[in-house]
Amino acid sequence: MEIRNNSKSFGPSTSAKSETIKLLSDLIAEDTTNPPGNESRVAGLVKRFFESLGIEYKTFEKEKGRANIIGYIGKGKPRLLLACHMDTVPAGEGWNSNPFKARVDGDKIYGRGAVDNKGPLAGILMAAKTLKSVEASLRGQVIIACVADEEAGSKAGMRYLLGECGLAAEYAIVPDIEHELRKIDVAEKGLLFLKVTSLGKQAHGSAPDEGVNAVWNMHEFLALLKGYEKRMKFRKHALLSPPTLNLGIVKGGEAANIVPARCEATIDIRYLPSQKSSVIVSDVRKMLAGVTRKNKKAKFALDVIDDQKPVAIDGGNALIGMIKRRVVEVTGKKAELIGISGTTLVKPLAAAGVTAVGFSPGKGLAHMSNEYISLTELVHFSETIVLVCMDLLA
Image (tube, rainbow, N blue to C red; front, side):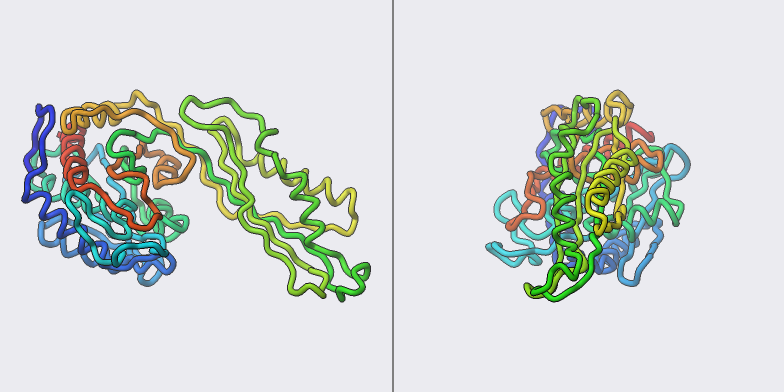
């Protein structure tokens, strides 16, 4: 890949496309569906790639088969971390071809993970190849983080690396938001998963008064919970929509002729930077207490399954300015700042004090059948990443 510092736009070379196709095809062929993950399959490919180029690397594995592999180019600070994940969601149905065998059709390459997140991973690895060739000119370090378990909460991936393995950086780019290189993610809603358990007493269905129906008690709570997001207090955010609440799972009962002794509800709340998860949890506890005051037989337990804080990055920081400028030079198009309701690796990185943003190629095809990515975009992405790294570190 040729490094261009003053080009307005360019077309990717045939050799860059061919190499990207081969690399991405190999990544797609390794089934890393999460669960169970088996990210070690892709980590093995990355390891051989790093070794072929002389890139130093370390492997971290919290669980057997759930490898994370980290490559290092250059030394010192500042450190720019490029973070991709190696796991995918299940392929599902509706594919026109084998989801684990890459299919090239014109400028598109199809396969599970083409967009989320093996395509961007291939683009980052191609950028690493170029950066290794100019390593001596870097005044800082590029860290290529190929991580596990992103699709299921990152407990064996990024959160493990930051919390237990000493992974650290001043800046990070997470290529996991799609948007065809036209958007930069600088804000994300917080994620709060709650599990409410209603505890009753089992009895024969013909004598319900002898038991305590956990499902009916849960119903009373859910009636209070419905519409709670509209009652929340918050300040509007310029890039984020209002908070949301989703009742994702309700499980209760064993049979029609048994009074259910247990019912569980799992709730997904996305909240804004102006809100605190502790206040939300307190509000939910008050709703549960309201049910028990009216119904002395009702008992509940509340568990916080996950709480990932919101992200709000200063849109005027140097990294964002570099990305914006280089996108225009490479693609001829502008990149705008956005906020998202979903969750990426930006969250745990920002929580660890890293200035992290999302930026990536691809359309909104993640988790869908016939997922594909543009090869031209991938090569443009690689060159943009190289130029941003040179801006920041050289």
